[in-house]
Image (cartoon, rainbow over all chains, first blue to last red; front, side, top):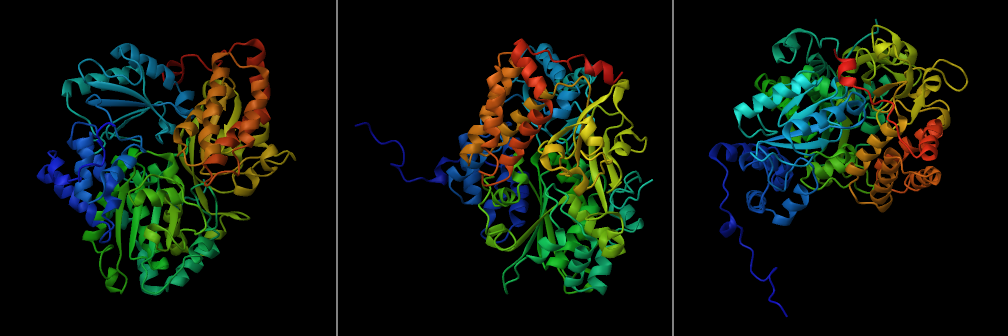
Length: 193
Length: 445
């Protein structure tokens, strides 16, 4: 008989959490929680996971998820089952800029596959991979609601639409020069329909 | 030019601000409803208008509202479904991005009718920046007294907030949306009970699409009867259509229900015809879930009558020769398009988006994608055509939510109208993507 490793100790959130929100992020989290009635703070889980992902390096580590659980006073498994269900949460580390190229019908009709191949060649990675410098991760996405401005890719909060190879070049160049993490929660989005 | 009621001001500079929106007649429906009408009168106007749900199902909105249970002392909620995810659909995004106050005004007026003190706008996570735009508009509305306590000095108080999702098509299904709004996985609930009885946190809830709620504004302003004069038969009012694919002018158009499909595709007012002088091959008229139709059946019904942009005309002939208006996601494909490959992108989508709760959908969507991949790889056999038909027929009607149907219908329709393309691949053991020329350079010089 091996020793029991799960459930043997009493779970103590306070002891496990070293990850902590900045004061500003905590304020945002409290505002989100205030949108729901007393006792229904679990509703804030999805928005707060977005906040946590942006705060803690673009992905949700087990520690981050435990921390979110402690803020919302729910069980860590309640956070994990949600984080693992929705596609926008990364459960593994990703590059600073995650490029999500839409590949569904209208985007495919307008050359999304060519865009994917072009980025693969240019960054020397395949879909699902991250560049060696940790700058870019390439993903394909299902319909992002930009069908009239296809092909398109999303990076953080920004929708880049009516893509051409030249536009892709310019986007990669800009992001590389800026060199910072891009999140869905960014305020400096650049979108035009 | 057709009448426009929802996005007539979309080109006005700064229409996203409260000041400009108000200067163009904004929030008049709130004034009219709160000061001169009883809540039930607002519901009656919506009933008279004949407004039908604009998210895809087309259920009469007034009737949905009248189902709302009103037990004493239990809060009621209005939830706006802004989880627009049906491939080919981007109208709600356009409306919210351009004229956010149109939705917020609709939320207030509708909440007054329903007696909801709190409402939520559940928006898909990918539209995070649109949520920012809505939040800025909500802050303006609070500052000006359109939201908050005792609006316009009346007894009616209302709070509204936005919640972003996490990226899941299934959350556009209303019970999955409510689960997600409660901070859970987006697994649809078994109905009954319907949300009107037990919705958000078990309380009576109405879930309406963005465009539906925005349409309440002109209905209250002009009266339900006037609104119902627009359109044909039971398809009243105007509808936002998201047009994409191989057309000259993709974009969001507000049409009067009842124009012909031919006018919509070929007139300069709307899509402006097919790009590069090509011929139209097929159309998906109402978002990826609805049956694809070849040119001859989308322009004319099987009886030879011109097909109209209405709920009834588009579904004329049932699924054998017709389709659905659905969400108004209108995808046009030119003569060089491979229907097999297009179906593959849809089926890959549904496999990705199945929540995994019901076996027929979870397993079936996976099998469909795998078999279609065989066609794309040129390794499919003729028997695979029958196998595809068999699998799709075993999903429909056997799942908790309509994602099962949504995944099955496109397969059935592609086989019904374009079976020869599947057979040809299987016989030649070769798939040539006839649509594979450099579209990027061809289309956007």
